[in-house]
Length: 302
Image (cartoon, rainbow, N blue to C red; front, side, top):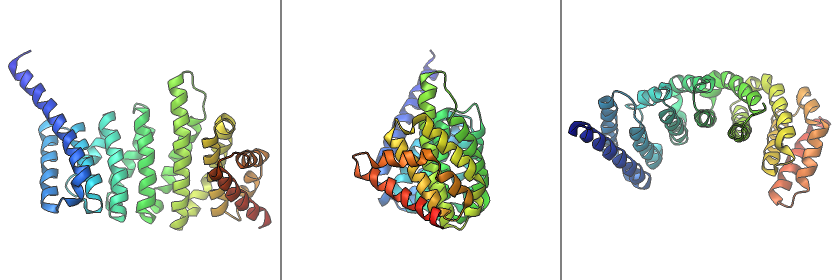
């Protein structure tokens, strides 16, 4: 190996170490960083991207530390396009980091993220459609969509809720397929749990922003997913059973007079699931079962 290549390799390794250290420091003291210093740090990270002629994992790691540390003070006007490039890069590590950054930014910037929805949301949708992307990237993309739905609220739901629900329905069907190996089985299990969480988040956000009419056409596919998940893991996994019952309770609460919800929410397997949850020793399980049971009773009486 030539001295020049050794120098380049060592420089790259040092850069990785420094970016990792910067991430840790910024997470701890980022709340004390003022705008001029934040701008300088962002400029250095962007310069790294330009020098490498691509968005790099180490630069994203450093920037994520600043996002977490600075919280609501963060400004992405200079680096937003590079986050988009990372989502489009086909680099699994960079795309996963970018999805995590979007989740963090959603909580910090809230409605200030609205101006970036047209850049980020289609990229997240494409990640979920892309069969070549790593499975773990898809999980973080689902979380990012849920966070944008909550914190960007009406702006997200009016424009992107239907497209997001279509992709969620496709992912839900995939999660209930049969796997041929243990790794895929574990991934599908994690995917089902992630989908349940995101359905709950998106449903509540849709209700809070007056967008339930955009969620309503997908209720049948959501109930199909719930029924399949109950058959696959519900009775054997108390955690999943509780999640299923929570989703059912929220659907019944948001759609108290929906005839289709009344028909699907009163099927025998749901009654059996609620009874099973009520019989568990943990108080939180009993509370969840009772909440959902009360919501279903109100639908029946409506």
